[in-house]
Image: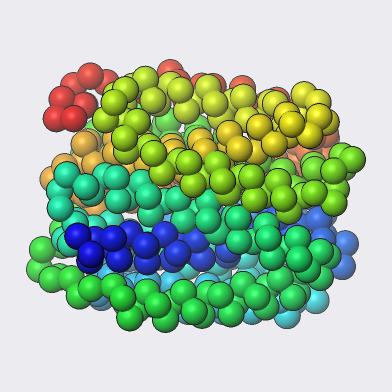
Amino acid sequence: MKQEKQIVFTGIIFIAMAYGISRFSYGLLLPYFNEPLQMTNQISGMVSSISYLTYCLGIISVYTIFKQFQPRNDLLISGGLTIAGLMMLMLSTHYLLFGAGVIVLGYSAGVATAPFGYIIKEKITYGYQDRSNAWINTGIGLGLIIIGIIVFLFKGYWRYSYLTFILLSLFIVLVNYKKLPYVEMSHLNYKLDLHHIFYGRKLILSTILLGIGTAAYWTYFQSYIFKTDYKEWTSLFWVVLGIGGLLGGFAGRALERFGMTKIHIFTGLLLAIANISLILSENVLLLAISTLLFGLVYVFSMGVYAFWSARLYVEFPSMGIIVTFVSLAAGQFLGTFFSGFILESLGFQLLFIIYGLLSLVTIFFRPLADELEDI
């Protein structure tokens, strides 16, 4: 049990780095470096959308280029790329170098997606695997809390924030490499069966819609807060977002108690509410509720979809991971790519209403009963 807790703890802090600190700090700091780096809303949207494509490439790399590597070595590669990408962001004086750094961070997060799943499968007791995966995903929330606090301390000095992120990331990479166990590679199933890739077509469509529904929030939530009377509180809203992400760790228990279909519908409704409630009023309580809900739903839904794909692709778990996270990234790519143009043309209110309504569509692509027979 001691080793199992150690794996979950190291997983949480690594995901805090790979997702929270590196990928999502882009949206938090966007208003600070938009002007000095000459980034328009369209450019920031395009940069973010390209990073989702490299995220997909990072996932695929684990099953092709790096498939003979130990999972902890994959994580070492991911950590090294994270540090390199953050350094590019810190040193950039133009949006081209900054955009390249964001794209590198997208790839590094993709490489970090699968290794913990294999470590958990090999080293954690079967009955605790889903819960362990759900809790490791809460690292996203922890990362958001960390960056919210750091940005609050440094205010507009975003380069100092990135320097702090680099030092934290270096420490996290060293801890993970030292603490994570060796995994017997012969047990890992990297086989893919492309003939059955669309067996989970409802999963694919639903996950793409989830990605679209979350895209505008991640990229432009901070920019919207900057236009309200709570500009000085923006980093604290990200702390609230992170707290919501930590609460998303209860996904495993919720699924066990209420069932996959009910939870799936519930998350779709909450995501729509999070998007639309953000722009209904500039009341600070409503803004805080919106951010809390979004953080909760994002982490919670990642656990839900991972649970669903594991049941669909029992014989080919690698394909299940690829299908789920590539579909999510594809949705985020599409959502982010168009969000910049929608924002320029229609403004924040209509942007978040449109994406809130798109989030609702996910409830029509829910699991079939025969897909969940073994749950």
